[in-house]
Image 1 (cartoon, protein in one colour):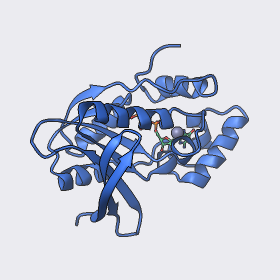
Image 2: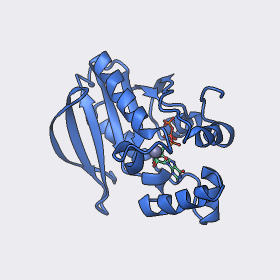
Image 3: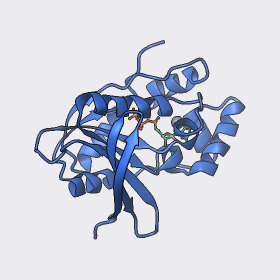
Length: 197
Ligand SMILES: Nc1nc2c(ncn2[C@@H]2O[C@H](COP(=O)(O)OP(=O)(O)OP(=O)(O)O)[C@@H](O)[C@H]2O)c(=O)[nH]1
Ligand SMILES: [Zn+2]
């Protein structure tokens, strides 16, 4: 059974040009988005970002992470290319949810890193389900993608889900004094390919 139903679409004028916004729903009501520009069904690899929801970074301008600048840079890259898709998965806090992420942030305020904090809460370090992106690509008629990401494990997980990733484009934006330790932990413990500082 397809775990996602395409339930709505509309025009979305943005700072980065005119997109089409698609809404998808899981049977339990959870909602996800695809933000599309241009013809993505012509068979050529599509510039894409699979972005995981980060309310604090995407909407509240938090400097604790790099999510907000990554989302903006991805939309800008799609605008420059004139064609592409941002898959926006509502898997907040690497899938543990917003309240648990706030609990994890509170532990990070006491000195734990992003990985240790999830573990101290008895939660998985990464609980995301990327098969959702495969269903969204299939629905949109996208056969292959060039992916904006720094995370090699995410690339492998996506390929294991059957997504044809033909290239990786680094997304090195948003470093600041408040997230430097977090970015270093992502590089050291989660193998993200980030510039050395
Ligand atoms: N649990 C937890 N989640 C976090 C924390 N900081 C950011 N996140 C979440 O992490 C997710 C983004 O994952 P990242 O590890 O930054 O990046 P990625 O998607 O794996 O890789 P990129 O494609 O390179 O961005 C979002 O859902 C954020 O809400 C944190 O300290 N703890
Ligand atoms: Zn974030």
